[in-house]
Length: 369
Ligand code: M6R
Image 1 (cartoon, rainbow, N blue to C red):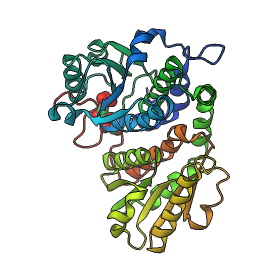
Image 2: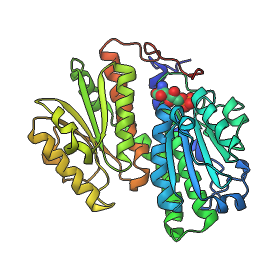
Image 3: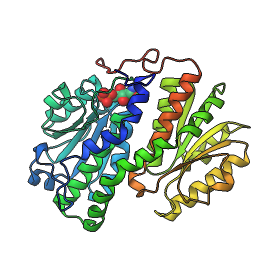
């Protein structure tokens, strides 16, 4: 049942191109427009939405953080992202014009379920993004967009995360399409780019051997740090979470701009720091700033592990290890940038002799609050 792989996690990492393609299937019509009729939220309700609140836990929360960048950019609707476990305890401001999006692979996470119940009590509409047909979260939501990752068995989420991202992009672009923002052309081109992305995930998977080798060489380290900016920041958090769960190492993700506000004090000789670099073709400031962050940490002794787009030469002089990913639009980069981090964590866990599919103390779905 592991399809020839040693672990479900490896199988699920390998299934990502298909999971991504399946989640797009039937949702883009021949004219390159999105058709999400299955979601059953009428367009007039979406036109009236004046705020979006995303609730989720763990990896699904990281997908939500990335969704915020896409939603606000493409739709101009203010969007908040909140850990489901914090949400209802702070008396959030919700009303019928708030659209709450609950993201959950299992559809059974108690924190997320309680958050969505709270939102519905306040009269908000809830859209679930979920991987499990007929599970509790979609049953209790007003609408559901299913991810088609197929069953995910390994405790550490991989393919479900990529499909959650695809679903979030679809929702963001659909909102843009329905509401007709000034970004009409961009929305059109992003839909085209999204339909190509499965191939690029596949390309990343084909070039992972050096990442595995690097992971094995770090097996006796105690700490790994992860840095990113913009959508690379949640990717850094996700890379750190994978490493904690699987390798039981101290791993932390930071927004690269926060470095000088504290975390840079952690940098010492030979400390591995993974840096997710945004596309140099996107907003130049973002890229240039992160290149100077890499210089800063390297000058203080960090061992830099740089994830950067093909053709980005500016990072080369400062990268002790360079992991190449295909060029994508900035907002879609997490779909390719996360994959090496999954492979990295899985290989490190294996090298440390840990149980990859069933990490200690964790359950696949957390059905208690
Ligand atoms: O089933 P859910 O997506 O609601 O689960 C949420 C988290 O428990 C889950 O993503 C967890 O963080 C994973 N083990 C991460 O790999």
